[in-house]
Image: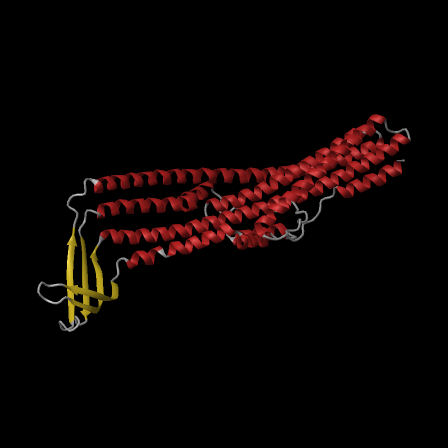
Length: 439
C-alpha cells in the first residue's frame, strides 16, 4: 500500500511542476485588431475629412473666377409702334477677390486646429485599441493558465481521492476521509467547468477584436525579469502626462479654438474690403442694336454700424466658451496626472506582489511536498494534503493575477502619457516568449 502511495504522489509532483514558456502572438493580435476594427477605420476616415478643412478655408481667401452663359427672350411694347420680339445671347465672366476679411483669416486658423484635432483623435483611438487588444490577450493568457491550473488541480484531487479510496479499503483511511476527498473532487470539477467557460468567453472576445480564431496560448512563465520603466521618477511620468496625454493635447486645441471663436466674434465689427471685376459680351438685339460688351471693376467696403447688440452678445458668448475650455483643460490635466500616479503605483504594487507571490508559491509547494511525506509517514491526514493542494492552487492563481495586472498597468501607464507604440508591444511580446530573461 505504501508503494501505491509513492507512485500516486510522484504523479502529483509531476502535475504541479511549473511549465516553461513558448512562443506567443501578442503583436499579431494587436496588428490584426488594428486592421479589423471598424471604429478605427471610421476614425481614420474622419481624420481624412478633417485634413480637408484647411484647403476649404484657404479657398475662401483666394480669388474666385465664375463664368456663365445665357439666352434671353425680350418683348418690347411701345404705343403706336409694332411690338418688338427678339432673342439675345450673352456670356459673362466675373472675378472676385477678398482684400480684407479678418473673419476668413480666423476661419483658416480654426481649420488648422480642426485638422490637428482630427489627427489627435485618431491617434488616441489607435492607442486605446492597442491597449484594449493587449488586455484582451492578457485575459486569454490568464484564462488559459487558469484552465490549466484547474485541470491540474482536478487531476491531483482525483488521484488523492483514488488513493484515499484504496486506503479506506485497506483500513488505513476512514469514511470521513473519503467524503472529504469526494467533496474536494466535486469542487475541483466545478472549478474546471468555470475555467473552461471563462476561457471560451475570452476566446470569443478576442475573435471579435481580431476577426479570426486565436488559439489558447501555452502557459507563460511567471518567474521572468519584469518589464522596466524607462523613467525612474514618478514626477517625470506626471510631467509628461500633464503635457502630452491625449486629453490634455485635445483640451489645449479646444482652448485655442475657443480663443479663435472670440477673435471671430471681434472680427464681425471690422470692415470687409473686396474687389470684383466682370466681363460680359452680349450679342446683337435681333438687328436693333450692335453687339455690346460690358466691363466693370468695383472695390467695395462694408462695415456694420448697428446690429441690435448681436455682435456684443456673440463676443460675450465666445469669451465664456473660452473660459469653459480653459477649465476643461485644467480638469483634463489634473485627471491625467492623477491617473498616471495611480497606474505608476499599481504597476509597482503588482510587480512587488507578483514577486512576493512567487516566493509564497515556492514555499507552498515545499509545504505540500512536506505534507505528502508526512501523510506517507502517517503524521498528516488526508485533509491536510487536500488543504495544501488548495493553498498551492490558490497562490498560483493570485500570482498569475498579479502578473497580468502588472503587464496591463505597464501598458496603461505608457498610454496615459501618449507614448504607447507597437515597439512597446513588440518588446513585451519578446519578453513573454523569450527563453531567457530580458535585461
